[in-house]
Length: 336
Image (cartoon, helix red, strand yellow):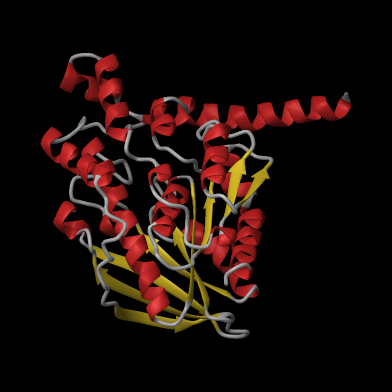
């Protein structure tokens, strides 16, 4: 009886944290420019719908800049021309990465760490790097298109101006993630990928679209984007009045947004090449990602493992990092 009560109190606390942040945080909202060009948006939706996983990714030519050495790693910063440059504004077409290679106990394992929604720069993901290095796992950090050093002119912070920009960012991130995983393999590394929330979904797409084994750890993400964007806490951060102007009402705008999201479904593609090296980490009290969407991803990736963190979505980003690191290391240990 007491344990059940504690469980309910804990669940309520995590859920309230998710709700409060979306309701209380003021300031500008996402998509203040509405849907953007409907023609370009529909082209991007078609790009997602007609994506051909048999088409090999573009080979990247990495240009290295600053490098330095820490107690645990050799670190390099690099740039590359985005394989999705055609759908990106000029300021976002150059990709930026930070590569950490362990100095000791080199195993050749490197995990691509992808950004969560609104995560500009590398600071938050660097908190995962040191514990990974202790386990002999290196890290490759990608700056998302539209974020940080790749923010287009006129955009306020990480707040995407239009739905069109959202689709462009996610399409480009998947293309870049897939190309970077190929680059890691070609450089002789054992490749892996992980991310939280948006980064988790990009991890799912990027690793599923590789025709070779990849250690895959999507955290706090599910099978489909639709419920995440239109049904749960995240949609309160959208400027629905701006979106409604295109279609005359909020209900019509929601319907169009939902229709655009229909092909954004990891289930449309085959599971990863080696699903035993995939560990999915869900947040038990997540106000953003429905529990059944996390379970659906696990079921689609037959042979993967599903682990639950006793957190909400936002509290999980802070409190569940040890669980995320453990999952990444375990996924690499299961690579063939």
